[in-house]
Image 1 (cartoon, rainbow, N blue to C red):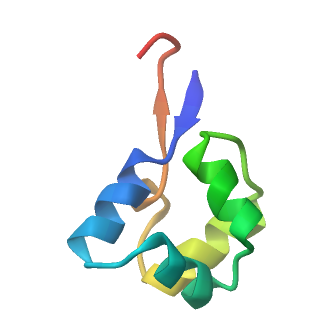
Image 2 (cartoon, rainbow, N blue to C red):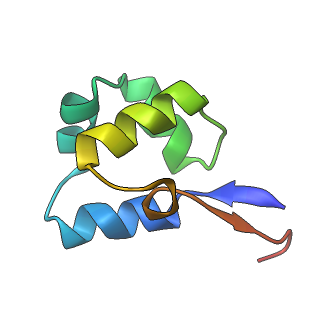
Length: 69
């Protein structure tokens, strides 16, 4: 299994936000955004910041996918 950020990208689209808007709202670095875009892992602290900034739950940000999906 691996972590997918597809729910986050859908949440941003639904809220008419850009990745840059998220970066500023959550106090993230450009590297954090880039790593998520590449599907790399980020810390729980970062996930918490995103959830707080978007006022959403963790399932609005990440999901687990089976390998090969």
